Length: 391
Image (cartoon, rainbow, N blue to C red; front, side, top):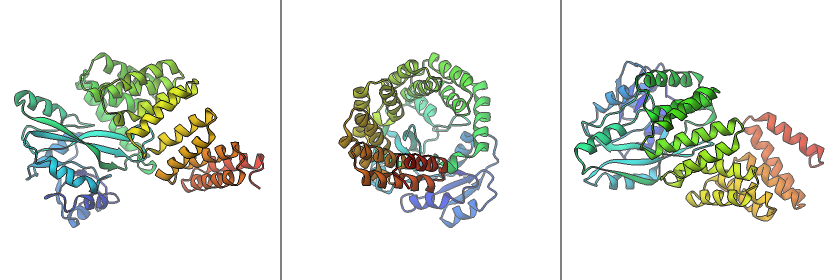
């Protein structure tokens, strides 16, 4: 691990690996809080590194202290899923595997809730991190395989890591965003033909409301014709998001479809699948939208947003009973899903089920207020008063 000022999240992370690993290496890059003391109290070895705007350099520093045969990489806002430990222990017994890619769940992410990452790999002297931001070992893996073709890259399809970095309180850290942009801009100036950097920096520009810069980089990345399926997917996916933001729905639809055509597991393409389904619904292709939402549910039955959005499509098709069942599934898998309660209230109202409708709307209001979304809670409360459902 590399860390800085993570005293709030670090204990949970380290507890998740205690008993599953033989050594915990924590490299601190300049904490001002109790992060180093907390790491030591959980049995970790703590080392320091002078920060130089280069995450790969810090990661490689941490690798120097590793004594075991395999390396598991975590960030402080992540935890190892306990149920996955037997699979990890079995995977590292395979003699020809160099890397096991792990599935990470992005808790709170509205677009792409799953990511496949090279986080479990052999402690091999030629495996090193590259790129100063969004650092990966992947380039060195490819180089090593070219020299020693017997090495294989495997994958574990069950969720191995849960990442809390997309929750609202962690996203609202403008300094980190500015740092990311600064580091990636510097890296891209050195490596202008890096399609992966084009994808990541282009997406960051879009998030920072810089659409022209973002689209230019994403188009450049596509023109570079990268070979990695995940990079090609992200370029098309983010470009679709950009066109959608500009109101160019046909272009967005084409980009999302190209993203879905990439040879990757559907679970890794949930964002494009969901966004394309949303566009189909808006454009009146309800059956196409329904099929896409159902494919998302087939890939991940507990995906609450897919159940909720399927409910919206079924409601638009006039299937109110089925829509209610879909909203209830969404709420079952995500009990604090205010929007699903809101949609449930509408569906009950359409069927004349007034008491059930009022209860669902009340739950939605309470959840909006609990998440401090007071404007939506007040808007919903006022709308209910206007139609006589609320005194």
